[in-house]
Length: 274
Image (cartoon, rainbow, N blue to C red; front, side):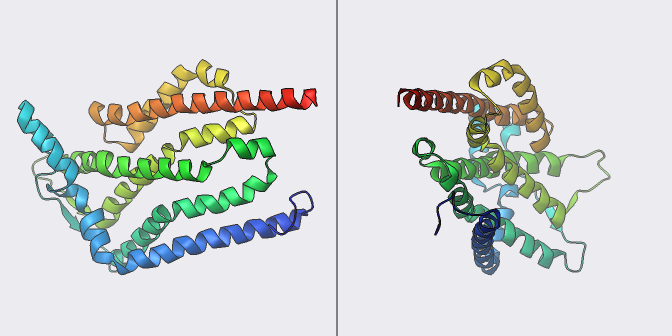
């Protein structure tokens, strides 16, 4: 930044924010163009992958199922027909998927732009304790996306794609419905895995404390189970599979909140000595 944060006016702050947003948007747009070009790989290998028996998760679960004698673990073995019922349906999905892929791939840079705008307003001590925020946030987001894609998505596709109310009703899944379900699961997982980062910012803002998070731990468990039920098919196995890492992330959030409070108290003590 050309000027010190204290010297900047409100309009200058807005101008600075505008340029950070523009840079973030351009990165998403550029990566979306790359994804648009590699259409065959994006759709055949990535988007339509979870419904294939050859998908890594499906192969692994099937091998485990054969070893333990539970053949029901062999999921997505039946063909799932994907159709497009609108004239511009496939082209629209091509653009939408490209934008989503562009956002996922460029997330580290997008968060970096956001962080670059926030950091100048921090004190020296705060900057010290928030080092690596971009790296940690990006890691958690990508980890959540991979978790949603490789763990939740194939289970969701299998459950919803094979569910039937009558043998006379054939499942022909609309492309828009399939992609929307997959995207919502993957993006929701990525954002949910940012729970420790959210705990960091809320603690810095003075909105939560470790004691507060401990006090409402049981309430958070109910919320986590509800969120798991929303982003997964309605079976207990999938919900528990999602709930366990979320509970761990909540505990990590308590640990982060505790460290921030300790750091703030230490800074206050040092200021009083001075």
